[in-house]
Image (cartoon, rainbow, N blue to C red; front, side, top):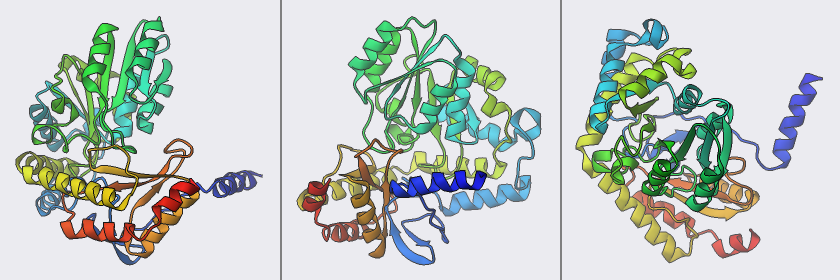
Length: 392
């Protein structure tokens, strides 16, 4: 009976063309990877600065593992908060120009932790419709009234704020949207938060390390400080190439999270060696501007090539460059063709994106070469894009 129910769920997913399968990676994360026993060129990771396999970060991890062991062995509030954790928090706070930082094991847990600590029944959470699933789930699970405004349509948000009678309001948004690659209008959002006495929270998972001075992220890019943006969350597993996440803010905010954030309190702390490797990655990221320069050169190269080939890119100036197709079947067909030609580009389908908006999500790294981008463009040129659009 139970197995029949499970099989029914799987059959339905397969019939919808939405069944997902994992690839097995047999190499370090890089532009050239070994997937399912085959060498391929990858354009689908979030390793934007090419730090996931940096030798200095790997060496830092090994030294710390020798000194502190593999696991933290306890939650942060028992005996799991190690010196590398503490030092990383201090260095991130200094880098961002914010009073304090608190580490979380994942970005998902950070978003859940913030909203569970701050929001309750009778409050209201307002989010962009295309926010990351972790933000959306955090809003739904907070117990507060939950509303999604139209993507980047802040007039819609303002009308919702005007109509709200909630005692406490929180506005949350991605800085760079993970599936579209476009950016939120953070200055106007900050102004709306001030006008309607709302707390403003930013998830900058895809902006941190890529945008702003030395990679300080979307808030720095738009010149927003602590007063305009009191809650800043970002992840460590993308531009920094390691693992985990953090929330940056005031002394009071961080203490509130330590006292009330269930996803912080009731979980084992990340391994100390991960924090030590991240400290090394942070130093590299802040010093080596050439990584961001090279990254955006490859983005521009790709955009120019797609324009010449008539490939329908979505409007994005970030390392996330989606090719909109629409049809699930056609998107999977193109993704499989690329894989047969030795290139991995992930097909993004519902429910990750809205219905009829399946796309190829092409992402770039500072490790990609000019020649590798040309190789991608050469294979993409073999695809009849006009026919795909007609079919969609």
